[in-house]
Each structure stands twice: as structure tokens, then as C-alpha cells.
Picture (tube, rainbow, N blue to C red):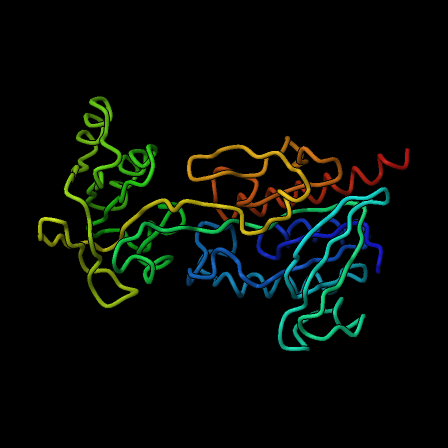
Length: 321
């Protein structure tokens, strides 16, 4: 079992950014990544300084190439199954990916076959494990997720602007999307019979030119992933270019719960509680990205990863003083 200064679990924007700080501090860092980032459905990242329009997979691949130039960095392609704390730090059990050559540096170093469990030890953990999305159960919605069914107008609004847009209410704060979206296009707010705007909110929506539709959307129409229209429960068909909604989110990994990290309830689901330095309630465990934030955005995830990596490094130094 190797001893690392830090293990980062999760190889999307937050985890890669955390690993970069630790590698640049010349600390031994292992990145474990299962290859299932939340943004894998999206063809491009937008609003990310200098990376606008790049495919998420290309950004991750470039970041990993850069990280591998640092001699203290190791990569493990696989799934972290469990994590435990002991007197010497943390032990993470992980399973290499398939096929045999996909396990990354750590798997090859130990001669691990696909599916074989391995354990690695570290003084610090950074959890950048992300969240899972549970989408509204509406015919035709899931196959358009990340393309014409979207969650963030700042991430994707410009690309669908100029046409008819919709907000599918999924939680009380959905009204906020209905107020934002008219800057990108003609907007309809679909209450779905779940989230009726208050009198004040209705007045605000009206002032923004947003229509309120109380008959539920029952199907999305067109050649997926494109969206041409939605069908309502009363049979009407309304043309739409894109539909914005908020999925219910849950932890994509059990590690934070296994370690006893505290959680906070966000508008779409729970997230790991962290302080200003991305430290969780468990000493030595840091968290960043969508798993540790109520607001989800690639730039915010990367920034939180930087802070988590810097804070983890600082904690290693303070432990020796």
C-alpha cells in the first residue's frame, strides 16, 4: 500500500484543479477517477475563461496531460468504493477500470487486473465526487439533457438564444429562472401544478414578459437531442427551442457519508458542508465541486478545487509545526 500526501477522488474540474495545486507543491498526490463526470452529456463548456466552447472531455484530457508532467502525481482510472480513517490518515479502497490497461499509473504500478480491489493510504483526502441528477419523468426529456434540456442559462443560454424558451418548474426557486431567461429569449414558465408563483412573483414575471402556463408539460417533441415543441396535458403543442429545469441531485459517491461528513440541504438536494477553505466537518477531509456546493458551474467547481488543494497542502504543513 502506497503512502500519499493526498488522495483526490474525482477527476473533473474540481478534482483536477485540486490535484494541480498539490502536485505543484511537490506533494505526492493520487487522483482516482471513475470517468463518469456530470457534464459528460454536454457537447461544450461555456463561460469558462479561455476554454469557452471546448468539449468537457477535451478539457479533462488536457488537464490530465499537464498533471502527468509533475513527478509526484499519480493517476488511477477506477472507482473509489470506500474510505476509512485510522491513526495514520485515510485508506481508500478502489477498483481499477476495465480493460486492464485503463487502470492508470497506480494500477500498473501494482500489477492489478481489472476488477481487483486495491487500497491506497494518504494523510489528506479531497472529495470531488460530484452529484447524480434525477430528471423530471417526462417523455422525451432525458435524451435531451445537456443539449436542449438545460439547467443553467449562463452555461448554455447564449447557444439557444433568440427562440422560444421554457422553464419547467421543479423547485420553489424555479421562478428565479423565469425572471432571468427573457434576456435570452421569449420565455414561458410552466408551473407543472407544483410551483405556483406568489402574487409578487407573478407580477415580476409579467414585468419581464414571462408567460405563466399552468397546464403541465407531458412530452417533449422533435428529433432528439433537438427540441421543437412541448405537448401539454390538454393536447396543445407549444414551440420551444430549449427547456430549462433543475434536476434533483444526490451524492454520486458514498465516501462523504462513510467518513461521517456533515451535509447541508441545498435547493436541489444535499451537499457536503465545507468551511471557507473547503474543509469538511471531518479533519483532514476537504471537498469541492458540485458535491460541496449549492450552485453548480464549471468555473466555480474549478475555483473550489484550487482552494481545496491549497488548504489541504497548508494543513499538511501546519501538522508538522
